Image (cartoon, rainbow, N blue to C red; front, side):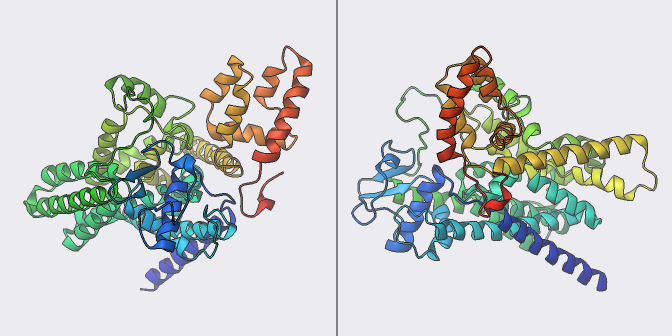
Length: 489
């Protein structure tokens, strides 16, 4: 019992420290795009007590309504606009909006941003808690678990999604909660854990209906890896799937006037193909090999997963089989998709999965704390881990220090100069590297490749570009930490 109390105290202190760290690095601005439309729906829900937006009661930017289905669907029968992300995400966004006293229709007041930041911090503490519980099964070493969590949360592109006021953070939390209770069911056959797992999976589907695909690996796992339990867990899982499907179809019909909502990334192009087998080789390259979107670039901790994979898989075969089943199911769906989520940060369609995919890293970390004698090979990989993770953490904090979309805004700015080498730079370099390079230039500590390239042939061109960039920076290059002293300039 004293040991349990000691561990609980340590965990409580870590949760407090995590909350304080995320409070320190919370953003100044509100995330634009999809989140803005959800936020407007949430404000309307709080003020007018209805999910649909009546423009007579709640006027919103017509730019968001210009393309039907991009942000909002118009329900002709109800005369209301509904955001295409559904009612549950709107409810989640309404929690911080409930405490917002601003009368600003756009909802971008300082108090609103602060409320959403605090809500994100609470959810991120929940993420830490569930991840710590999951890791408790795989390692008895407290420091291995702590290093794992801070490595994954702050040295990868996950750090960005802990800060952005978007629905991605809810995906991480709910997916972890689902996995935490499902692995408990795998070990204990406790149906209470299965019901909790199915509840969180259902909520995850309500956040984003893409996650309904995880019922497939769930059924496969229960049939082939837990046949001794018979049909009972399969029946409960199918019942969960059926109830969630009915709820989604009925709410879709209520909001959008049809049982299936249609996301239209480019509705102005009727010939655009969303899914095609021809996209598969390009997506494979993007997710695993490209500098711009590779999982290994945005989450270098994945490189060290291979060093612990054998030991982890040998001890926890069934758990990791389920993780891989979910991962490959996601791959099958995402590889034929036309996009990797370009206007967001990193390979965002896989970010929710990163925490579980990296689980074998815990065995790699344990090997250092359990080893009585550290060999040269272990020293080499240990130093490589510390060096690469430290550098990646630095890059993440560099990226987070500026506007969420600074990389894309820089790319648009320099596209006017129509220089091939500059275009290649923005098309092929990782976003956090570009922003880090720009921060060095902005602080007067280094050059910025696009400027150097443009002025290579004409030295006087550098002055022109820098003057234009100065005007750009006065509007776009603000510090995106709530506490601006964290930015170098």
